[in-house]
View 1: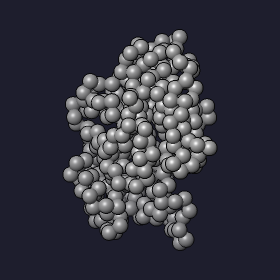
View 2: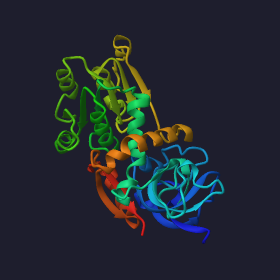
View 3: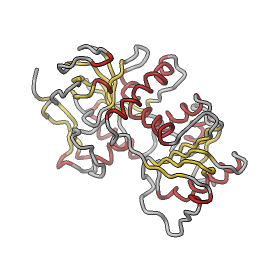
View 4: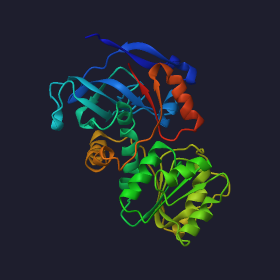
Length: 338
């Protein structure tokens, strides 16, 4: 077997979309309790755009190659074998890694692999791990969700919110709300995902709409990817003892002048930032197990919908990044490797 492989590289280590190209690089070597997976498809995430630009801190020891979620077949196993799942060479899997998925091969912990169901395609499976595990983490571990609580997901058509809205509905939220910047995406959240209400943040006073829909109580949990530009509105819309979970800064990191933080005391609310990629394998592994036990059966029987917006060959990875930057997708962008 060759010691090299093809992977998406970034000219000069960081740069614009045009810096992405496919190059020959060393094939990863197996560590303890790892599998070498030949990748069929990989999912794109917003952190990939930031990492490409040099604005995302890659975890220590992680591959500098972009990408954290993938599907493929096991090509080789380390001496420790296939782990608790008993994986074998040739098994079809999908999984989550700390980096390295934009490549022909990836070395990954066997604990972070999941068997690919026959009911799902390679492309669908490649878009599951980061998205659904992030939504699960934000909702349960950070947001402290329980049946009967209300929840709002910003960026309704983002892959994490698509997962989160469905999880919220399935686990008996009292009400599920969403926001987006386009009417089409708001309609998608209600009609396709089952949200109780979705509000256009460019044409509606979404805080006013949320308060009206909750009898002026506000929502118990807000999952936010926007940051500074929604900070005040999130405080205005959160309920007493509520939790605002921040996962990103699409709206900037500097708070506007005049921001009123009195809600932290008046409402006893909590603002928590979180990042899945920086968590250790034990933490991620527990979420992986929850995905297998809780969500996988619902993927297989169709109760949970997997939305893949666009599939492109990895030779068109620049176009794939461009799609994410345009913010027009509803669901995952996936690249395939032939």
